[in-house]
Image (cartoon, rainbow, N blue to C red; front, side, top):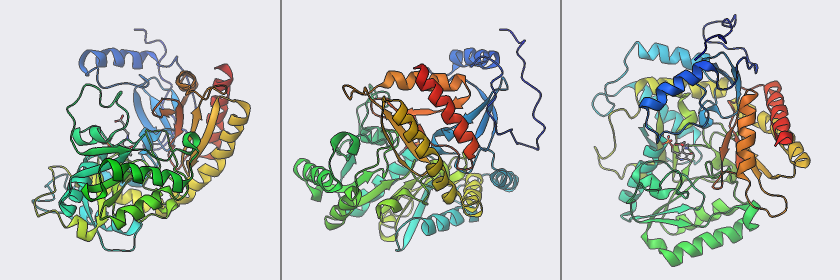
Length: 453
Ligand code: PLZ
């Protein structure tokens, strides 16, 4: 392994700052990344995939820097986690302060204030003008596990309804709730029972109105399961891994109404769409929803490990004392980070920033669509946008072009994530603090990659 391509001198910035620019100084992956990757292949399970074997050394705002000194524009933000920006000053300071005070006691043994504060913030910022309560956990999947567990206890029913193209996690129950077998579920069964998959609303493909799609979902569940056997219906307001599928107008509201009429707990899985991502605190607001429960994770704590369930107080309290918990749930350092993130969203108007990203990026993506017929659909809300690739003749999903473009963009210093049941979607989840200039630069790279593909 040659070491002649050494990293450039660190940029002349303060503590953890990084120049907000794209700068590629070695082949991608560079020699240091390649050496790390060899070490990794020897000891890390092959089941842990790698989208791009570029090893990251540091990051700030919307730029990540690898061990070879390459600066990448980050349009994925660690799958929508870094809304407040990488190494956000306020989050870094809050974590540093808390880590030197107390890092762990276990909230259910001897509690601490940051957990309570996060719960207060979640109660205030989630839609629904009713009494709510919270449980904090460690991951999105664990939040879903808890939502289902509480809904079952509350209703005394077992059935869980989920939607086609949905994604909910990698634990046994959440695997059963995923739509896509590969790579999430295949060979990992047997899976938890009483999980029922129903057709969703996917306007680009089904052409149905919200009312028509809701009728289809509801009649499917009524025939196949029976409303009185369902504890909950779990729906992502905008389906994330499924390819940023924005349901037709009125679809989700009709499902919520049906749930309410039938005593079914309506759970909005906002693990990907929540915490300012779409220009609202929670995407449910765009659809006029007041979910009985919301699961939240990712963007909530600036990359620190935190997730939670917020729900109607009477539902959340139906779990008996001691029925909810876990060693690390609501860890004080993670909670301190979350409090700083919520504060930053307000102080820096990150809801406005998400809307600004939509108004900058959406027209540029539509221009790409006009130029490149392989882009069949441009969709999303706020800073949760996507383009879906299909063969312009046949309408067949085109995953090959998506892979080529993502690989070429990385070579040029732009990180994009793919998504979609058929792998034919490029999704954009940039840190909300990204500048318009970086967005324009990144799109010009995608444009060139499209022309090349
Ligand atoms: N619900 C809506 O998007 C996580 C998965 C990444 P965890 N999505 C990214 C991967 O390949 O594992 C997600 C989500 C929605 C639940 C989850 C699960 O959240 O924090 O990854 O458990």
